[in-house]
Length: 332
Ligand SMILES: C[S@@+](CC[C@H](N)C(=O)[O-])C[C@H]1O[C@@H](n2cnc3c(N)ncnc32)[C@H](O)[C@@H]1O
Ligand code: SF4
Ligand code: SF4
Image 1 (cartoon, rainbow, N blue to C red):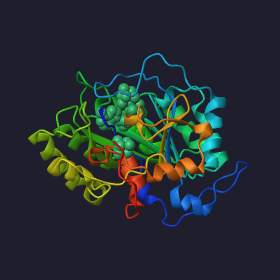
Image 2 (cartoon, helix red, strand yellow; image 1 turned 180 degrees about the vertical axis):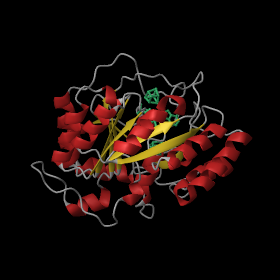
Image 3 (spheres, rainbow, N blue to C red; image 1 turned 45 degrees about the vertical axis):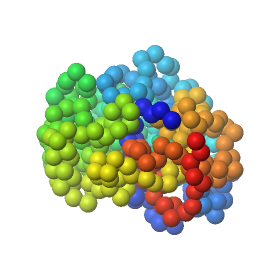
Image 4 (cartoon, helix red, strand yellow; image 1 turned 135 degrees about the horizontal axis):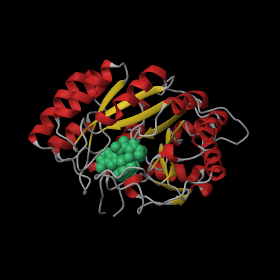
């Protein structure tokens, strides 16, 4: 299996899902039963609402400059289907989800449908007072924004110099949880520390993510490693994610786990296809409209040969709950 860069599209925190919690209540669709949901139901689905992006970060393989937004009616059909599968949390992503002209009505539908947590991941460029108030009113519960450094460079424009004002605006107005990810890998590593300090200073929640290279590996320079350790210290307990898998990847070159993608975590692309994650789109694909409890069960038990090197943090978090349960060996 060949691999590309492995973004960590992590939810604000799956760990805050209450243990033994119930799936959303029925709102018209027919959710899968509580027992089946406890056994293999989705905790998190990433739903691509447009592949188009207004930026072109040098490390990213998940955007284009030309796609049209997925029509609202189709997004809502997909949401209904995710609801029927009793999905706990839905995160709208892309490309850049704030480019979608119907973002706010879509979020309002997510609330009406009964999803407990309703998130977007954004590059923050389009955030202004009107949009933040709109997100409040539409019932957004979580927003994730990653800040690659302080100053623009050849790889990224997602930097504090541009986003400082937008982050302050969020700190002032947002009624949803805002997680700011400081990124190590596309700017001088000391800049990540500045992002964390700034984030804490204005009262938002900081975390740290590492960029991955074109083969999915985490290869850090000694300076980046040093910065990563410092940032983790600054973050305290919040700096450790999914059993510190990043340390194991860095130090041992592998961090095996039982990946439950296709059941606990779903990645739904702009064509309505379910994939294990954004980086394995060519390995597993099935129409969401035809996805059933049997698919959830089958993918729960399917071993994934990419798991040892996996850097998709949200899939690791969503899989942690079932770490003790058996899984078939990976095919191939
Ligand atoms: C594909 S973007 C889509 C949402 C939005 N455009 C944004 O940038 O937040 C989702 C997340 O993937 C991250 N990402 C993209 N390429 C990555 C890579 N090679 N390594 C780690 N994270 C990556 C981005 O930083 C962002 O947090
Ligand atoms: S803003 Fe997001 S989707 Fe756009 S290129 Fe950067 S990481 Fe990719
Ligand atoms: S282990 Fe799972 S989440 Fe990680 S790359 Fe493979 S399929 Fe994707």
